Image (cartoon, rainbow, N blue to C red):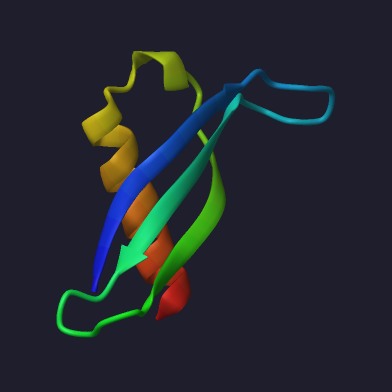
Amino acid sequence: MKLRLHTVKIHPAVDGEDSPSIGAELTIHFPDKQLIGGMIALTLFHPAPETLTLAEIERLAVAEALAALG
């Protein structure tokens, strides 16, 4: 299974939130299977998301998704 960053959105902190958030969508691809794939969306909180590179956001998002999938 491969997870790749597809979409990123930076959201400012709103009332009641400690920090801004990153909205990320990952594509899911199974290279050894045909016609199986999908998307997963998640929100990550980070104190300064605008300082992160796309590669760093992808690493954070993939790690979070894999942890959630178990």
